[in-house]
Image (cartoon, rainbow, N blue to C red; front, side, top):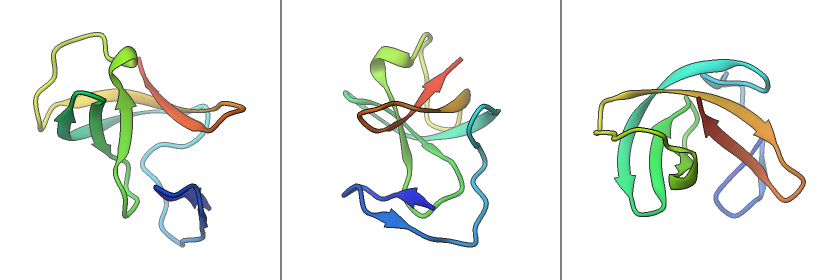
Length: 79
């Protein structure tokens, strides 16, 4: 189960490329002012906020990421 872009829970049989408390190298699929979109194996991309990015990125780069749960909303961070 994950939250879609509208914060609606979605059930799937797919396994994400990154899970809670695990690190994975995820491919950058798009870059915006908000941050880097990465492929985490789910239908919708996952945004790594600009504040979490510590180096210059290009589409196709792999970014070490881990999933964290925040009280406000699930988030991803880069390492």
